[in-house]
Length: 385
View 1 (cartoon, rainbow, N blue to C red):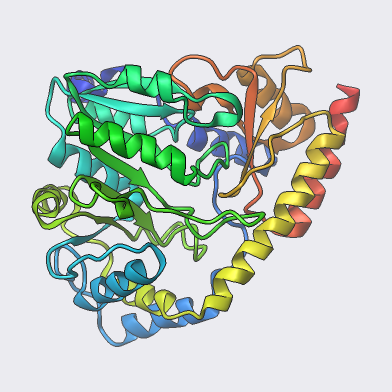
View 2: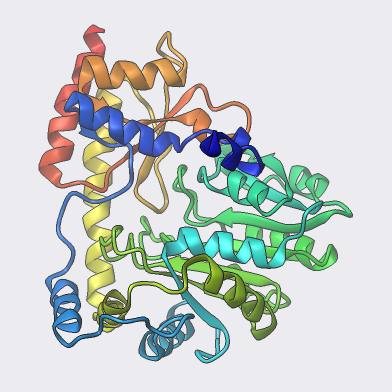
């Protein structure tokens, strides 16, 4: 009875994470998990050694609530160099327990009940619940051809109750990297409507085919209304470390830090020290990372094409968002068929939409080459199903 009462409020209408559900199904069936976006290969040795060294050196108590000084200073230097944004490490960088916590802390700090938050579709599944937990109403806007920003649709979504927009570039699940022109459209709408932008840039270093990353917060007029969310999880293959951050001007960061303090107190202290070592890696690391994932992208995309699953070629991130309209299944039944009959797990496309997506399914290629090759071999069974 107590459990029922505890979840009778804002969380009552939530379903569990579809992505994590697919991982459980994959584990139970012994399927290859191409659903949840975590690597099955090792993190860089230098990071693991830095974490062990920090623990041995007794960095095992609370760090400063909003992040260790060393990490915030290293982040400020990295962001100035790579993202073209200047933040004071003392007052404008908040380290949290992954980008997930950084996002919800930011929304709770800056969005009020009754506000509206524009969510660009398709979207990572947390953004809708994050908005609801903050007491706001999500206003979903589907993209245009190739998942590009539809200026007319986006403009129509902004109104007198709009408090913020949330977007993700490079995008999960589509792999879309928003162009300077698209970001300028978003910036102009935020300025015109005095709205904030919550921008998840967790895949900022995973880019292909000459695409570059541009931070919305670096555009003129967006310096004091953008919260840039980042994480070490994907770039350094440490999704279990749960170290992320929110970058925002002093006024916004002051509010975010207050919420963060009461949500989680702080991120793991020894792992924050190891993340300093991550930011000291040479530029060649990021070139090698992009090349690594480019190879994996090609392996899986070729295998999916042979299995009759065409995909738009991603410009960034490490997912393939496939069209399943050639099969006589919706996304939910197709995902179950993949696990039970083929031995590969993926994520139903509808989990990335408020409505729709039943003709799509998402695979991750953040796996060892041999894992992907075996998955492709199994996917050939679709020709016989």
